[in-house]
Amino acid sequence: MNSVEVRVEVEVNPTESVEKVKRAVENIFGSIQMELKPLPRGGLLVAELRGIESLTKLYNLFRRERIRDAARAVLFESLSDNTICFYLNKQVAFAGHVSFSKAVAESPLGPIKVQIKCEDPRKLIDWLAPKTT
Image (cartoon, rainbow, N blue to C red; front, side, top):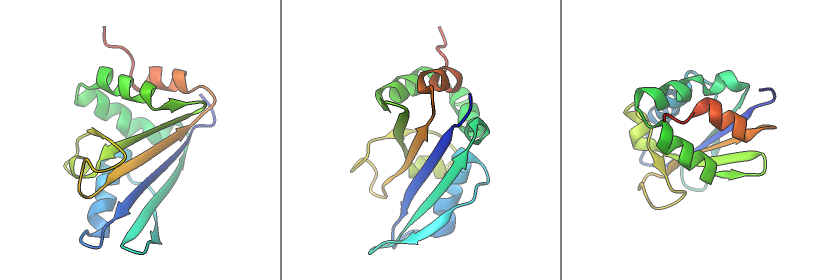
């Protein structure tokens, strides 16, 4: 699977520590380079990742948490053309776990937005979250 591009975005609210929000993202994606962009209130941490290897930690979390089937359903729901776009709960990620979230209002601190672009997203989903049955 070539040309996998992953973009991660997460808002850092004025009440939050940038380091803690970074740690939440790193708990899902490993040690990655992030850029902090200023927002009118707080900031936006953005990471651009390339290659399927950038999803290895998420791949392992789906297995450890035993949520492959649920993840698979969410990923297919999140699929549009060559892009998979989904949201993860920031507080749960900080605790080292994976919980899918909605784009707005589910968590008061806002979600982690993950956008994956690739040539064959269905094949990527089959790798990331294969059927368990």
